[in-house]
Image (cartoon, rainbow, N blue to C red; front, side, top):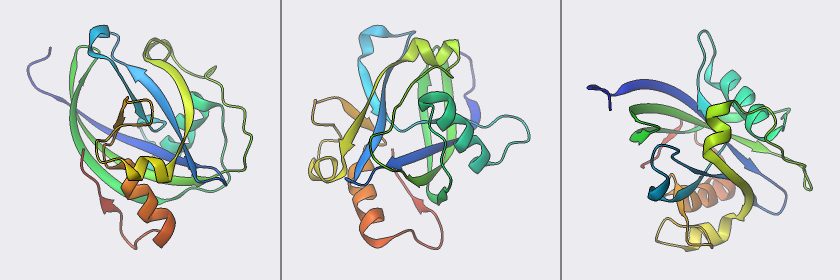
Length: 170
């Protein structure tokens, strides 16, 4: 592990279909396969000269094959520290909302080698079910990150986005 955390800017996408299900990727840390897996939103680090919305679109296309016409936001902001693939990371991330039509074909063909090594699967998760759990897990018992995703997304879909991004916890 490096001595000081890597500072990283990232953009993530809340992909929601007409049935109010959110698309999540199931991933694990290749450096720690015994640590289990988790569900998270598509997204990743900004490249040089890229805005958060540009990174959100690029990451969504790379990780899911989906292109979106409209991104709303950022709707949330989160500062989080985590360890992944032998790195200690302080990540500052913006979340965008993308409403999509149903029956989308998701594929991972645009992922780089590092992402392919970490991402196990993808799945649509009912927002109300996620919001109804108080343990930060999906229906299959696997952790969801951010842990407040279900409740925060249910509020966002019911109330619409705030004028400024909501601060979201881990």
